[in-house]
Length: 85
Image (cartoon, rainbow, N blue to C red; front, top):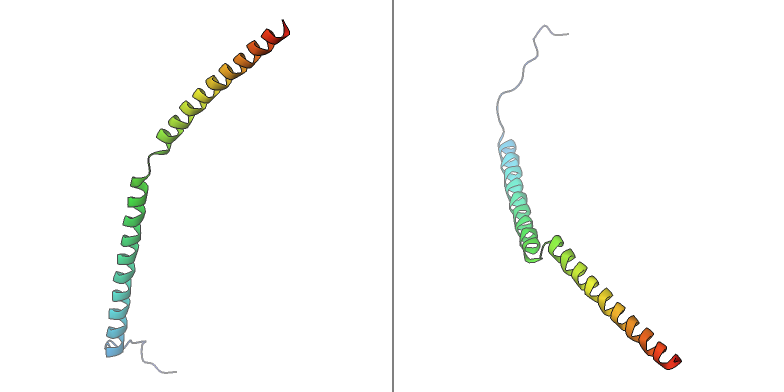
């Protein structure tokens, strides 16, 4: 065994600099693409009405449908009673 302490070469090679630059560029491109997708999703969500408003409209329509059905059933019952007499 050698009596030399463990040492590191402190020189930076050209290839290491190129690799770091390529990775940095790739990260920036990825972040840009993610930002674009996020903005597209936000725009799509903002175009749709909120779920609570849609649910309120559906509940109102169902209530009106039930009332119409009740009127129709009453009219049918009245017409049946009229023919039975």
